[in-house]
Image (tube, rainbow, N blue to C red; front, top):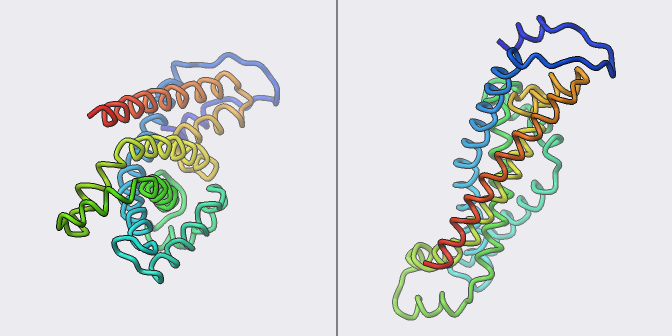
Length: 237
């Protein structure tokens, strides 16, 4: 549908003003929004899960912590420090061969979910670790002195104590993943970013570009409000 619509649209000179045919554009915008939510949803679930595991591992294997292991901490810490600073648009192209091996292609919505999930996992892992580090060590020591196993301390002390900031961190991750999905549009990843670039920027249609920005802003505001509300609820529990 998108390709046929692209062929149907007339070529436009740079800078030329033209009305936007929203009868044609609205279905494309809706499809693009659904693609963005699809990419972001899967990335948050999978990346959030692995990020939580990696963050707990980073915290737990620190010197003096529950599962102290210098080798594991050093390697994982180095990986996180190596991946996190890479700009996503460079990361998504750099791991293209790996994406091809795993997904079977490097262009399309499914192809961009893979690098988005990896980047989200590393980003969230550091957020989890930082939130856990802020927990009073005395709480953990008290649980251990009462005979709680290390895994039970993780389940019943660490995660509940850090739940509110973890929710805020997860909300922050959502905004970052939305940003990733928009950049994925540059390499044919679909979604709102692709819609804004193809029908807005490349056709000099600023109306479509602004509408795309507005849709992203609305999505982020809604999720941020939900995240803030859940975090407040956890603080008052």
